[in-house]
Length: 282
Image (cartoon, rainbow, N blue to C red; front, side):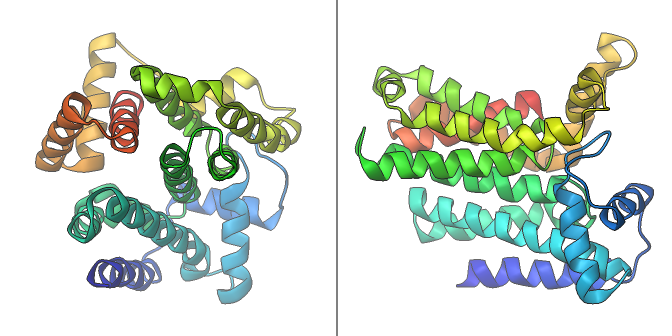
């Protein structure tokens, strides 16, 4: 209960602060999208436009209206991570997860802005939680299949949010290939049906962005690289530090490394591999 209250308190604070500061240029750009809803736009999938449209329908074309539903999506993502932490590590882990969300600059501060990362955060959290539940279920069982399909549906929502959502399934695949007991799960239809479902849900992106070059879409989704390789790496490291904060980044990296070496629990290994994949591709 304390962990939930912390996350809800953060959300209320984000709404209050977000209602009082002007929109940044990107948010204004996405608000323009919300005035002309479509299946897709030149440089992003459409989810953020629909979230902004829902908020402005309630609060009007104000800063709170633009940010209300995206911040609510952040709360949903945080609550799902809390549930995942409690499932894998108990009540104390859930509280630690809530404190981590409060401490991460990208979640506590930057995601106050209405950007595609807000629906992506919620979708990725749902997809990871469902994948963990699929691994906990008996191989080949109907519950396992249902959870795999849930993970695929969440991944599809992620692809409707931001193209970098493709990082998560690669992390899940790496985890399934990491150990013999997990590789046996690849004999199930669930992972493949999940991928198929996500692909079908992404079809509107392709249809809605027919005029946008695919290369531009991919480069924008992952971030285009400019300058020398050294500067690119320094920019990447700086971005990771900004996302997690210097000390927290080190602690998170240590936790992921320990889990990769020691975890005998398949769901925990999955979370660790996805975390490592996020560090590498984030």
